[in-house]
Amino acid sequence: MATVEAIMDIPMEHEQNVLGQLDMNIKKIERSFNVTIIDRNGVLKIIGDEADTEKAKNVIKKLLQLSQRGNTITEQNVDYAISLSFTEKVRVNDIVEIDKDILARTALGKPVKPKTIGQKDYVDAIRKNMITFGIGPAGTGKTYLAMAMAITAFRQQEVQRIILTRPAIEAGEKLGFLPGDLQSKVDPYMRPVYDALYSIMGAEQYQSNSEKGLIEVAPLAYMRGRTLDNSYIILDEAQNTTPAQMKMFLTRIGFGSKVVVTGDLTQKDLEEGKKSGLEDAMRVLKNVEGIEFIELTSADVVRHPLVQRIVNAYEKDEEKRARRARQHEMSPKNYGEHRNENRHRD
Image (cartoon, rainbow, N blue to C red; front, side, top):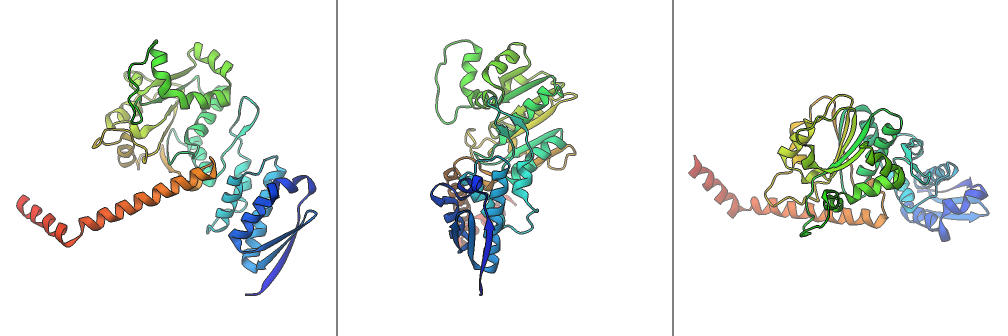
């Protein structure tokens, strides 16, 4: 294949941000597309196969556009821009269009926005539907983005209150006796929800609204018997609900309310053999109008890139285990035993 050269200018004020510390971003792009990139005072020369050179140029162009919009370019931005370039049927300028969708601002004024196509589809589904299920691994922003949208709706007086709930199930560890009043006992279970609230709303504003009863953080069991009107309700860690709890929760919803249910089916803390209410809801409600299921993947992880690699490693391991289990089930010996069992039943 013929080697070509492409030239592009990087304005001096964006050069370090786009190229990365010690040119880390550029080196990653070189490795990903098998091209050589030479920087001469903000003028980049990209050398390589024509198709690869064009892809590398487009990635750098998107990073520059993000930088021009005031973003600090992170390793996650670079990785995602590169991964998008290998995806077929990608919408034009996806990564830049996504960046324009500001959901809220944190207490420190930092914008909260989706960072991947999956996250953008998730927030669009929340806007469109009365009930949205966000399902995916840790680090995909399921709870944080839902929280940002709830706080924005509350500030714009679209809802009268925010209700945040999750099942109070220990993650494989026995916490024993917890001293204090009811709030002190449930706080350890709700800590991740508080973290997101404090980050976006600020501790003082949260405290003020909480005292007025406008923001409520409670275990799922306390939802029974209530009707929740004009509320923004987020059920977190829904993989730890039972089918009965999920049905109870979804039938609490009243007029003027919006619901987001988040969960990760790979991190269930239910007793072995117990069915997850989230899995059950995916089966029962998949064709119900007004309900949408959004499945996020490791490509949507926006924490440290190592988290994405950890999620991928676990997914591959689970696939291997499932494959081995299927092979074991279909081995001649087991297959024969299985047929004999069926004959006896008949």
